[in-house]
Length: 477
Ligand code: ADP
Ligand code: MG
Image (cartoon, protein in one colour):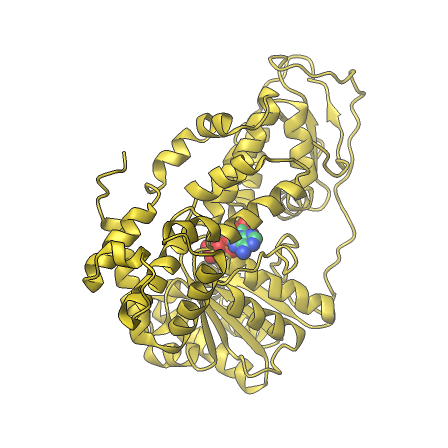
């Protein structure tokens, strides 16, 4: 599997490696840092199997199970590791790897022990009063567009191109877990800096903001804290629902928000729910949050999920059969992070065992993850629930009848199938009286329009989703 050239060498195991306490402690600190920046799936897949064996002369040595691990970690996480090293062990520290304990074949000849310093030029613009908190991995170009994220994505791109100069201030994107909110937020920061590296960008989660603020109060530096934030040109605040119940922090943020807003600085927020449903927050803050542009981001439909999986496998230079891609897209429907985690697990599994990736290997490698997923929704179930809800026999949903209430229910059912089942446009069309995929596409477009223009339709649609998810399907195992 080709990955970028590792920046640190892989060494052979030192004679009689013993895990020293210092190594363990240093590694713990790095792991805590990595856990904060990585999806837990990725962290557990790649970093849990590593063992710290030595820490001396500023060099931390960890043992990797195989060359594959080493190449993957260095190919994917080198900048993150550098940052973790710098922030936990200081500038002079470095990391070296030793290969596994001989249980896995390692075809490399013994290499002399050499150590590379990790200090790299810092690309961060010097004007920054503090770290921008951005991860270069999150960009617009690797954020797959679909009907469920089209508007927030477009707004994010507009904001990044002219921060503070659009009407989208603040921009708030809300939606469920693992749907790309943090990705979009970070992409705004990365793109804004790419347009103009002299501006000050700050990405921060509310959790972290709260911790920093509490620290600042304890050390009598609350004024400096506030002043620093007021110098920011683009403030990217992640997960504002966590302001709930934190009154003092909210108050602090309220002042920062007002100061930035009044001087035309850009504010972007994410949340797990719409502003009106944010409880435990000061009303003034909630009304500020909702005063700019508010968009929701929904779980991707089947075609978008396929595009995301295809994109990741292309990045990893792994060819996956269409059946495997569809298998993943069918089973991981609600959370892109979980779907991504499953794919990474699958790639690792295939590489470690040297086996080809088939639907069978996918099924066995992902067994435990699949159990946690909800049972996939069937088209039958959607038709049954929609029919029952609108008192239209499911047969009529499939028939060539175009009277208004029936056509409306049919379009809703089609859109729900795309959203909830693992089937494609073509497959859904086929199951609605052999209609063409363009008919399904039209239905999806119409539903999207209604969702955007009619709040009462939003609740109607959401009710149906809940009913379908709770429907016990007699035909399903
Ligand atoms: P959230 O903040 O909404 O919980 P994240 O932004 O952390 O979700 O997204 C979870 C993972 O899924 C990230 O690795 C992100 O890159 C990926 N992801 C989500 N949506 C997309 C998308 N549309 N295209 C590509 N990757 C996506
Ligand atoms: Mg997030």
